[in-house]
Length: 167
Image (cartoon, rainbow, N blue to C red; front, side, top):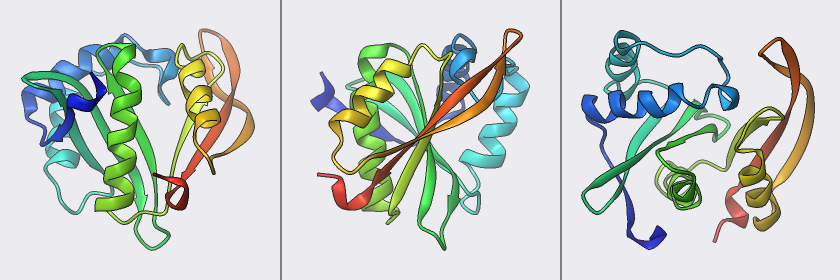
């Protein structure tokens, strides 16, 4: 199924649909608050539609089905780095969506390093460690007490993917 995936421009409806997925996955996000429809509408106007924003976002599609919202945030053009954002409807779409965003970042945006941070409380921790272990040239650093969630501080792991190792 991963071979059928492609990136397409996002519509406001896509962003609002992804918001429902996002709000069910608060343990993995930098902030632990759900976003409202109005906040997502503002994000769409301020980030997705603004070519001068320091982020680029796309929808992930499998045929006619919208299955994810991916992006690269906090892009530093002078340093050629950016942070991966990955929200999918189902866990089985994560690996294909990650491959698409790495390809877009390295081969379309000409970035050299793409990174993410995964928290110990995240249900996606195994997915990200598997990607780290399967990706030649990825680096990992442990960062203490990076996320406060449900009354506790959790460590994070910073994972960096390098362009030269992408095949």
